[in-house]
Picture 1 (cartoon, rainbow, N blue to C red):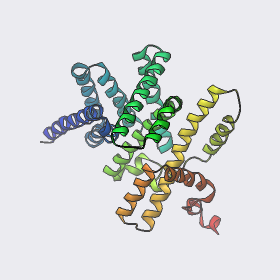
Picture 2: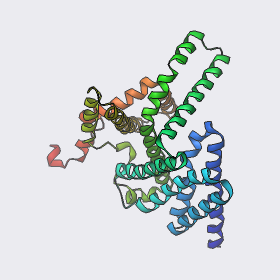
Picture 3: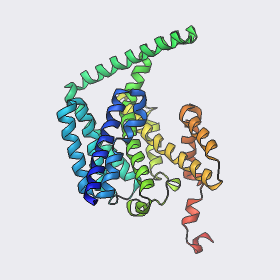
Length: 317
């Protein structure tokens, strides 16, 4: 009976991860929600019934995508398959959440860049195709906004700035890709900790995500990259610094969210108000920047009093 249950869950997890990936790729608006969850059915199955079963599920899925879905979809699944295998191997062994997430995201980032280079054949062709795709998507968005009756003056101004917007987006693209991969890894770790709360202490050194804080030396990277931006004549270094700043900003954004979640939990704020706050943070740029600032200034403010709580009684006195 136990073996039949495992086999049934095996095929259910396989179907779930395949549907999440196919649904996220074929319906781009839904992909924002579906794509990050692609590894989750396999991870949950593997940690419940054994890592060996989980690895077998990853291999089976890879074979099916190669045979039935074509090269491009198989390559996309391969990225998530590697992410899943790395989580199977490192979760519990690499207990620092920041090292776990950044390490796996770094490996997947390098693999993704390698796959893109393989598909396009050269960096110039890849950049050119990205430039063309972004320009077409922005032009299509402008047409939709025109049909919806947006002010013509505002649309004309945006049309004039499309080349500048495209160039800026291309410069930010490496940092955006790394941050996106890191968030996908983090989302899956969070879901696993919720599904298997008894294993959280075994997997991670941080007892609760509400108490997480970025490593303190990270602020020196922020300062160094900030100085690079003001040095003239270093265009490549400036692009590199901008992408590093984006990654560091994402770290402080997550720390800011942890602070907000900490005080929500401490003061028993209703779920409705929490949801409204998180929606504002997600869609209002000013609130997003405020959360980043909150995370950064926590380095000096220690708003959650984590340092004081970690002191021994003699140190506290």
